[in-house]
Image (cartoon, rainbow, N blue to C red; front, side):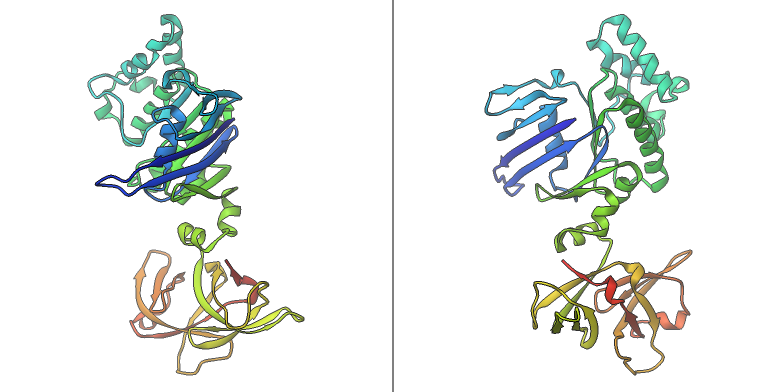
Length: 357
């Protein structure tokens, strides 16, 4: 179990604004994903957990062993923290073979134990045939699996994997994350994966936390977090739902109904507790719940929301349609004529799919 409560105050510099990291990470055995955009504080958090930086205050434990405690004046050096780290950038020495890189990492162990551990990891990750290969000759996934083996030479009690290169295509990410997931399951240690790709959370993690501007704002199983974002800011960050501005025209608490104005028309809605007539709200709607159809005439049907095509991008099995009102939907490819800029469409949203953040 990794239990890291970290507070760090970075002053402003000529290149960067002041930044405060205030996060409490709890990672049980298995994979926990730390999801957040660039500059959210993911790498900074890792640097504090590994001891590369000293927090302003806080406490860091690994399986109940204190690695850092500001109050007790405990600060174990990085080499004694028994944490493996896989950095985002390639870090195998290019002038050494893969096996020689692992041997170099194993010099902290007794010679016989180090040699055994290197062989064990090469076999564990199917790298035996690549042992003599130089890092520049390795594929991106082979190189990163080699870095994973390097990080595990000391048999650490926890593993931190900094972001997988953002430019990697899905097949590469899936291949590496499958290796990481298999190892986490067999080793039974906490693995923390930092990422700004939401797909990584679903591919590998049983639990995720959302890091935004230096603070954890929500956590839980990936599916639960994405289905029920805790705030509008988190919904925008996740980018999974459609966000629609609306105004409450009428509320009926007894019948649990409302009337909303969306893009100039009235539509029925559910009752929104805690809101009032005249409130301006943002609806959070799952894209799959929205029915979109071209409008053959100028008539606006009751309960239907009129929108106008801005542009569309054709894909092999669907079309992403961008509307002038700021919405985007992935739809089965309709007739090309209905995708022309300025064409009218109408949306229908079930009341059960409407929620307010």
